[in-house]
Length: 173
Image 1 (cartoon, rainbow, N blue to C red):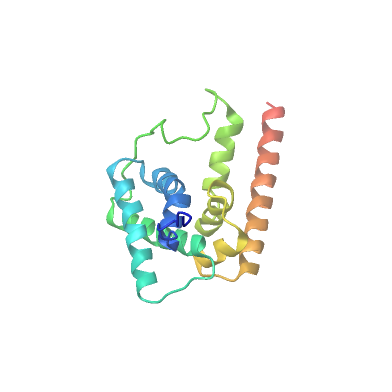
Image 2 (image 1 turned 60 degrees about the vertical axis):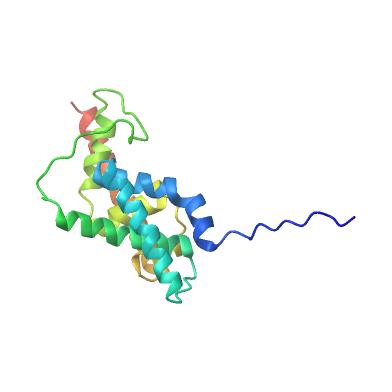
């Protein structure tokens, strides 16, 4: 009697990426665009563009970073198409951390991060919210890994310094 042979083909890179990253991409877009149908469309378009790139012969060194690079470009394109002054409603289902009402530290952190340069905010998000490695961030942003390290270091130092100043202000009130 012959042993049973698994005839199911090995999952493709795209299938593995979908399994590993679809939820992360959904959160990535939801934080930027408020969730809903638009978020699902952006996730789908990200994987379609990844599939097209793979079909066209691209073989990224860091597939996850390449995928988030596509997502970043799609997110920027969506913002350009949208009215920049429109205020998005807060969706508690999207929020990962619920801040206690009136917590000045959380508000100070949000303000501090929003005051950073866009590229610094992007690197902070990709590193800490999305969990990308330095190499994956470099691939996503199409910048050298040393630049990622430097910008991340400066962003964290700036946030730390501003929060210390804010803490000092609160103590002296």
